[in-house]
Amino acid sequence: GAVRGPAQQPPMAAVAEASEAELPVVPAAAQPLGPTASVPSPGSGAVADASSVASESGVPGMQSAASYGTLGGEESLCGDGTGSGVGASDDVQGLRQLVLTQQQRIEFLETMHQQALRQLRRAREELNLEQQRRYREADKVLGLEQLISEMQAQRFEGDAQMQLRWEEWLQRSRSILEAE
Figure: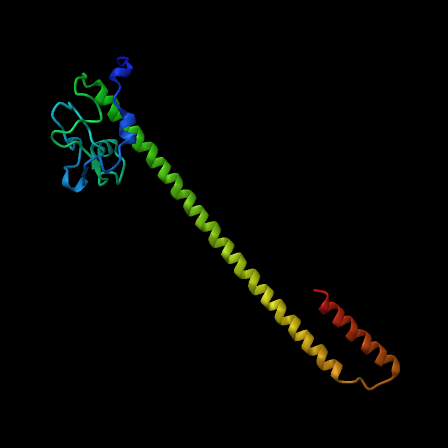
């Protein structure tokens, strides 16, 4: 293609800086779909809008996206209308590339979001299992403490050697349970 100087470059920075309030919103449903879905303005030459770029690029689901077109009497942001049409095809190619890049970015972010949701779900399940395990352990400890208390209330009636051994077992049980 021909090399274009700075004076011939389309004001793409102006497109990025323009707010939505400055650009007329034309719902995609109000426009025909396909390669002819551009809204020409007087003196703008061949101007393609986002819906025609999306439909020509074969990107699924992009045909219904709202497009920003130029209405009668407004200046086109894609060129001054004095070019040979080469600039418009460069702009269309640039918009196609932008659509593809944005679609890839969206797919990447959706994938990361789904991965984060799966990790969160796994972490919650693990936390739930750990809490249930701790509740079961606490129930066991309470049951053992109750058993030891009942055993302490009952005096072992037997010889002195067995009585000392019984007291030693109870003391060891208490120290194990209190060592948490």
